Image (cartoon, rainbow, N blue to C red; front, side, top):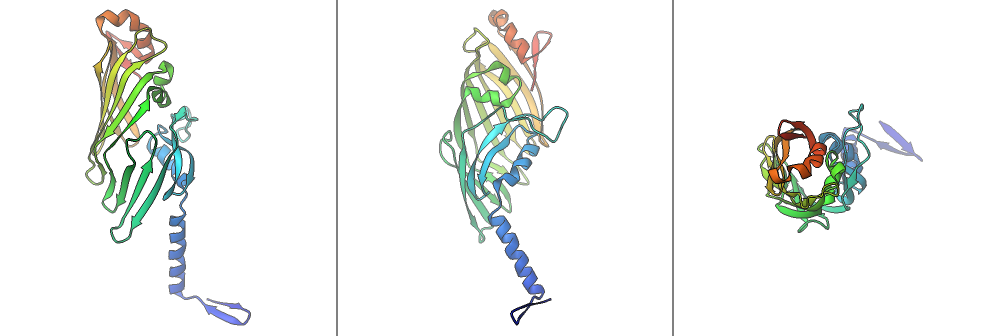
Length: 259
């Protein structure tokens, strides 16, 4: 191929095309907008987690996490987010020698900036912890958005490795939870453990309190299969019957959790 400009001829061979292609790919990767990944995140989490108002690129930018559910009758569309976190920001550093990129993520609720590394071996997230207000649960949808819970949420996790042999442990503690629709205060404290393996095993159990919540589940392929039950200690059963009917469907002496 030959192109003429004012009497000068420029010949483009296959090497030039390859160089041009590589430069184009490099520019696309260097400027890759973070909002390109918003749909992927929503699809992989079945709309449970979404990126809201993302700005910048995957290398440096900011966004908020939003929480929603799949729109009824349209499995490819998410409802408007029930709630969202404060904005978080990130900056990255990549090394061609190590074939690795590291992101440093900052958020006001984190105990310290969080480090995430991506390499040819997989993804690694360093151990950390965070605290969130209890009303954060409302953003997770039913039944929490009906209960309007208040209290504290503490998140802590070990080093998480997501590769051919995923490992890691995440624990979420819901402390001194109360609800404006119940006169019993507090309702109790609870813990949710997520054991990361080839699939994510979920365990919910009660730490203390008159409202008893227990259950087990499995998160795989973007879907959560969970079976749980709610009940009350005998001396609080009459006071909590209204709350229990919102939490789940009555089945004998317990209520089946809706999640």
